[in-house]
Image 1 (cartoon, rainbow, N blue to C red):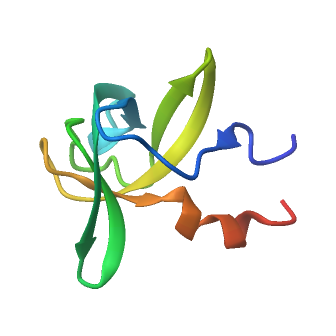
Image 2 (cartoon, rainbow, N blue to C red; image 1 turned 60 degrees about the vertical axis):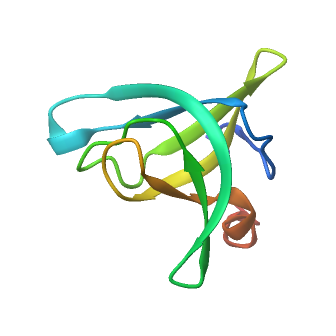
Length: 100
């Protein structure tokens, strides 16, 4: 299996539909849909803010966007719960993915 298994998106448009996928509390998969609300700075780090509802335990899951019928990884869920979660955008992760 070659990684990354999905293509990586390095930008978003405010208002673009996004989906967050995680496993809150280890009880099963949760998929939450919402919209990109842009990037914010929190504790001197850049995060993607979206209107997807995030639950405890979803950290490490992905935020995806579908473009032309193809899924792209946009960010990794990192902080927060409810409709105010923050995710690490993939442009900060790409240097670590090279060679995989």
